[in-house]
Length: 340
Ligand SMILES: [Zn+2]
Ligand SMILES: [Zn+2]
Image (cartoon, rainbow, N blue to C red; front, side):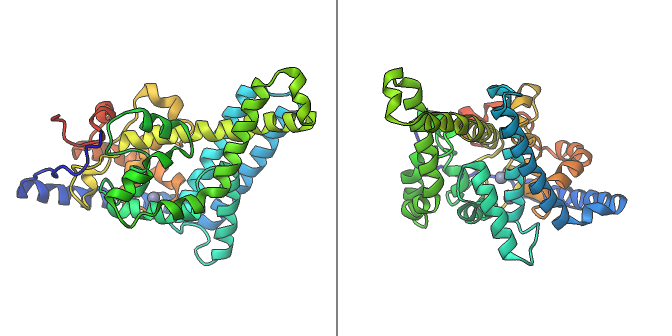
């Protein structure tokens, strides 16, 4: 059941003014903490070098994990966890690139990094995501926020939201709903932009299902090397992609409010989710639940700096009335209002 389209919260004028002041305070504290960290650790100013080095480290980590798995040094389960973790770092880099935080002077280099990350993550096209994500910052929680609406925000928790949680390409289930509520959204161009990884992902999933289900004598339809390659790619690419997607999507659908919140007011856009029971999930999305809210206040902060600065500003955020571990958000279709 879609519960979008209902009226926004009514906020008294004096409360609105207090929230404005509070938003300014949080922003200024975050900026001050960033400046303090950068002056205390001058190497933090070398953003391009840091971003490029992290990508190289991720690629080395992927090569080492894959080699260890293929040589039976690590079991399949550990290989999946390692790869999912490395993919989550690649995702942070992609997000920072979307905000022009590395190599802003060289689109060619940015595009190369985006292409590598697209291959690493086996997920949505980063260039398509750039448009959708910048829109998220402009319209968080509104009908125009395609990024979150494609994950089912604004809809009651049902089978479509669960599929979108599990499948990196499950958003297709919400194309119709998003196109209906916002005419600017095009299902066709979204499909076209994401087609390459969509096809590779589903071809590998289909082949691995066949590999699992076919009786031994029918495996001869393809050479043995094909089946072993499919199995290796499932462990090293497909399953980690699903795990990373699940963890990030679960956290993003827990921190973002939607539908009944006022426009352009960051106070209502997010909450802090850092419940201990969710720590294993946070491990594969770089502690997204605890820190994404800071990104809504200040966009121009690379992910590592955000995490360093968040520690000092967290208490201010909570003192200013930021919601904290409101885990029932999922059962309200992400609405801010606690009244059914
Ligand atoms: Zn962003
Ligand atoms: Zn957000």
